[in-house]
Image (cartoon, rainbow, N blue to C red; front, side):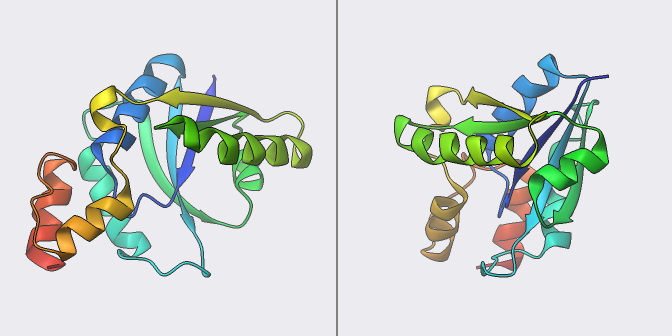
Length: 158
């Protein structure tokens, strides 16, 4: 069984993330969207809120599950039996950082491979940071996030 990990903060999950997940689900037997806990980063949503919203958003993708982890992504991947990391690319500007991250992960665990997937063009500009900024300034985020995320954020985070 080919298991892939799609790590990130997903604070919150967007349509761009879901597009990457749907593509990955067609390539791998099992995909785990892994919410990374980063104590150095101030989060908008708690890990529990993110996992709840992710689970509601991925319910129609049968071979995708959600989990959280702390520490190195490659160590989490080893514990899950995964040898592939999924990384999404929105624009060329993402590539340099993602390439460095991929090379670092390979240096830490030589069996891990990184697969880069791109989003549909209509999702290229969407980021969790942009979503938070639009929401905090009273804008409409409905076309950028799945319905469970939209409902939750508009009821609880404005």
